[in-house]
Amino acid sequence: VTLKIELLIASNTTMQSPGKSLKEALLCAQSEDRLTVGVYESAKIMTDDPDSVSFCVLAMDEEFECDIALQIHFTLIQSFCFDNDISIVRVSDMQRLAEIVGDKTEQLEDAHCVLITVPEGSWEDPALEKLHLFCEESRRLNDWVPEISLPER
Image: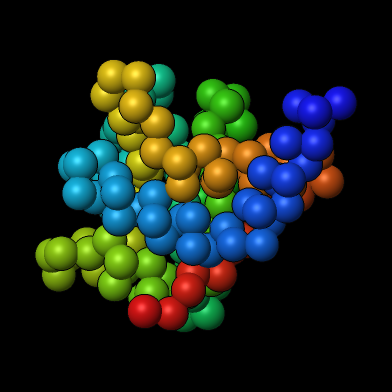
């Protein structure tokens, strides 16, 4: 019963601030050089070493909603994530995601997909763990790719 209550509390905490947890996880992964930015770069990592991928973020803006090629890439990436038990979320503000993860001009232009790879050793990122719990809870509610709003600066 205690474990169930602790999981419920952790889940409720996660549900209240998934955007903040996502930002923290992205910044932590960036500082440890565990981020991959870009659809093609992400596809390469997923193909070469799928076990190294811990988390996937897909970003879409209104400007790209009609981009059929990008939609096909998203469908393939989502399918790959489902098949390999990789947590995945969507954000609707690609510009904000690019501001958080981008340090090069080309990254800002292709921030449609961002991967976080597994931390080395036994250390786990608490923000990433909250995101995994959030995604697990969302899947239980049949929301397979939940959308998260990133916090402002």
